[in-house]
Length: 575
Image (cartoon, rainbow, N blue to C red; front, side, top):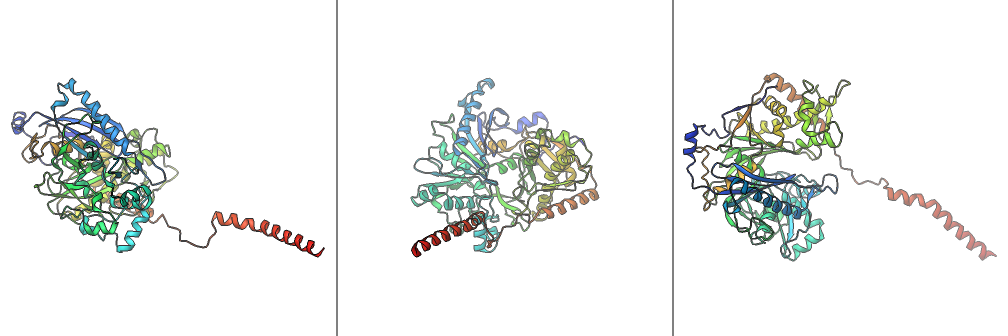
């Protein structure tokens, strides 16, 4: 395996300059701090950065619990989300005096959040009407089928929204809540129900209900926003039976939104000036600001985004068209193609927690390196179906190619390779559709600490891989977004001209031949084919249910009793 080497390269090809020139290039208005609320699927954090060099000087993170009431259902407590945000902000601010700063040095706050996850709440009481339904939840499958049956094609709205009709997006979750939760239905009738993605819930709480807003990146993941007008689309609202007054107003990613007024927050009195969905924040943090530049975030799932510039590219191969960023009300809207892998690091957690092949998912690299290859074992981790580019909800996970010589190490290595193959699936489509050459891949996220995974990815894709030394550039991207807002002026976002001190990369180069790559990728595609169509819905038939059997089994005894009673009555009458 080739170890990554630190080389002076940048995802935006920002020129690396001599140290004294770097300092000259950072002539900004300066000095203030910027705080970032980083609300992810598994963790919530609050980070504080200096400007203009964006060095993280304080941070606090906590785990966020997930509720799974049924198989395929994923929920989170909206009150726990806010409590955790307030706790993280408080703890991070306590660290400032050690660095020679105080809360008074914080100029503004940015927010980055898990996308698509949907919350509905009572506008009068401010209380949630149901738990947050998480992005990967698949309870809305039947709702999807109803809508698709109505419009005849899952891609019917793709030109408007860039998205297929899928369980993934917020519109389906809101519709399900209206159809299945009486409290939500009643609140809608009384026009006191508010709905939004997690950023909207956070802003509502931080401003005591004064602001009900979202940004274009989060709105573009709802299946309700028109990609060209950047407004809620009347046709989509009518299709999903959602009233516009429930929804937040759509704003740019970077502008002064208002002040934090909540007494429960240590951030009270500070300005909010940045909102970005977490994957778009990562794209910005990786400096993927030119068309064709692509990043992948490796976490429990994988999220690939490719910058396509100022024109949306509507995919014919299962990719999503989304907003990358819009850095101000008058700034150009930058679009991206996106492909999502629903199961990446989660496959390693499954090997640890469910089948116990791994004592600790963090040791996957050590176990996988004990064998030179996966031994022709392929693992398709389609636990809840396959996302881009397949979009097959009826797929299920398989491990194929087992022999009597297969060890658990081969399966662990196959799990790592499955992340790389799924990434290549998406890269193949992006290369065909974006119109730009993709000649390298930028990586961040918790899983990128695994050097073997990074090398396998370079070998599988046949591309140089640049691993950000930030490990997670999401909060960094949100910090830049908030700091550069008009009226804040902590920095001016000019990646072509500026050097950012904390953007460095480790490089992993391909070590395989094209023939080797194509042979292995071909086998992966065959494994995927075998995972498709596994879930078959049972048609309603006259077959007996358990209740029917209980009823039928009681008939002989019933007939005996009734006939005995009739004979007794008859004999008495004769007598």
